[in-house]
Amino acid sequence: MSGPRPNPGHLPPEAIGKRVRVRLVNGEQHDWPADGKGGCNWTITAHPFDIAEFEVL
Image (cartoon, rainbow, N blue to C red; front, side, top):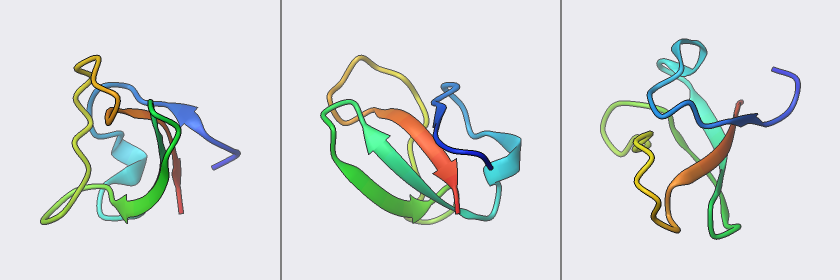
């Protein structure tokens, strides 16, 4: 990938089975599994802990 991309509101196909670096709406950054147990919640709910941007690692 070429830099962070906006959260599409659902699991992006290119992230399936991979880890992602996310920036949350509140500015925090984390590296998490994109899916599966302990995976990201891609739903956009207007909450400060929503994913704003992601980058596949």
